[in-house]
Image 1 (tube, rainbow, N blue to C red):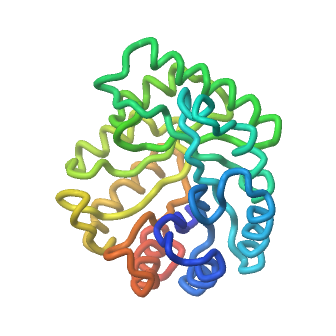
Image 2: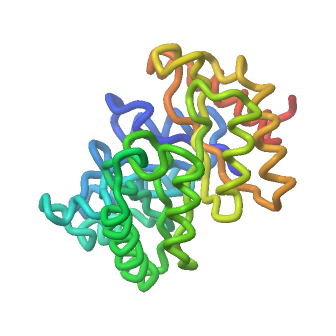
Length: 256
């Protein structure tokens, strides 16, 4: 379990500032966002950011794209552009959004469109040695663990995985049950502690007991995913070192 950072945590910081802060905090890997830091189709920036990452002894864990399955092609974002950017960045994995409709309103036809596009782009990515990971998020077909599992079952492919993060407002027991549904296809993990809702972003240490159980369940299930901080209290770069220390302790990469 390598500790890392999702760079959209600090959208206002430059890539240089992010790699310096992540390295100083003792983190090991980064998921670079495709909205600001490494825009889709900007291969020059992607190459430069990838090199900055490696120069600071960090790994590129993933390219956090905003490609939405069954949606983006029609809106002008070709997956090939996203894929080429990931190649330039040196990312082994691309995050994709499993549609833009929640599971409660997505009918069977829409689910099929998402699945078909997932399988199509997974083949393109696999040819470049890159895997895909579904964002695990509201407003998409992974807004519940059951829906995410159904999508995974509909897209059996060696290069398709899912991200995971604890649904905000869920109990630890509920979240563990959901985690178990997607664990066989788990990619990497986004870590934060929001309670009781997304408006209350608390220090990760306050959720350490819950995270110990989540990570233990992953290990017991034979998984050791990389775990990346996503957002911090107040979006404040000054608290990164503190939040990173908690994550390092949880993942076993730092003496408690």
